[in-house]
Image 1 (tube, helix red, strand yellow):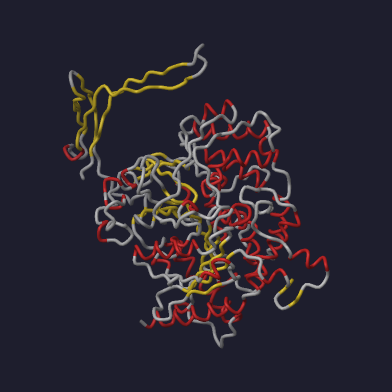
Image 2 (tube, rainbow, N blue to C red):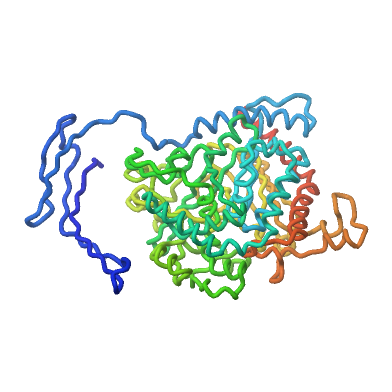
Length: 607
């Protein structure tokens, strides 16, 4: 595994369009190659050496080898980073005081006896964004926001989170202000997102990124469109800016999700979960993390070799919600209609939306799709610019050159016992690759269970909000399968046929025999008792009140379709009110879960 310097001599020929206006494509031919091992070089001395490149060709190199003893720029290890550990110390003090009040305890629980509570939001586009606001507002009315240690999301839920964390004190303020601001943005027309002026802005931004040496993908274009959908202005904020929102433990710790996939592998596809936090981005599977400020910079053998500016959060939003980039032509059609002739169909290879029930049970280690290559033109400039690009967020692989799989067979983070799985082949794992291909976590499991179920986070209670139209328990079944393969404690998920067909507002899953198994409280998105009650125990009386609660979430004519990015104000209000009500109406179940979590933490500490 010793390092070596490889040298290639290439000849590149560019084929020009008729008239020589711009490069159409280029062809490269390797004329020769050779290598020299670093271990053969004397330390600290300048040497001249000739590296043979094959027949009648060589290259003369003047080199000096030095040993670098400073710490690596990639953090290696499975433990939480020091900043997250400091956050938990501060946050647990707040959680202890909160639980004493809401659970009416005689005294503050000891910091070591405080249960770690994680709240999860699933994918589902603007429907998920809107519903997550309502769910969090319900928890706020129960005075429970300060009991949450982690807040994690996928796709549309990450859009909600990224808007919340622009305010470093958001959880201590009345959420109605944030909700009202979101309503204003989501209820306004999105047509201007595709105006000629805006398209020019997109192109200039993407071209500037490429000129800076960054890898630009179709997902970056989608991120700029999302920026307009959510903000209607340029947003200069970055993920690392959210450090001030957790520095004093004043808000839950945000964890955003994506999965790394492979563009050139057919069959036995796999998804490696990547976590994005204000301090670090990385893979707990490999135990490799980089500072959030250094994401999308170039690394080799654990060292930062070329620093790029940290990407604006809009580009991450595009990556986190890249399932929609797969159907970007449908988004255009939905937003602008068919009257604008300059928007031609992209003819994507694969469509991905979650409005339809999956025809078969999916393996969380196999993606229903990996990458989507745009097949037709948007505008001529975009056709040229995105030729051969993919909708995965392609970024530099910060693990490149590291041998993180050396002891992989002894770790349950690798599914090495499956002979057909990529984990069984160390020379095919991600540290060997030059690039990462990060996509919407919803392509694997449409809820970020894998990120909060890591043993290092030691989560006791998971409050799961599912905003999919169909298969309301699929994320639980997939999470259970994921955990079983890695020997991660997870409750047994048993759902009867009646609940599959007519789900209730809330379900609790508990393993009474094993205190290490987290308690899972699961909220499907359903309009059940909200039809008849405007608040828990208070029936709807007037015709106006009844009309407000009488609506269907799913259906072909529903305003909450996944590809709808503009809600009427009253539709937005209904969905927020429903999500909030479902939390309030199941207050007893929430408080029971917290009591159980508190007791289990005490048992775990004694053991």
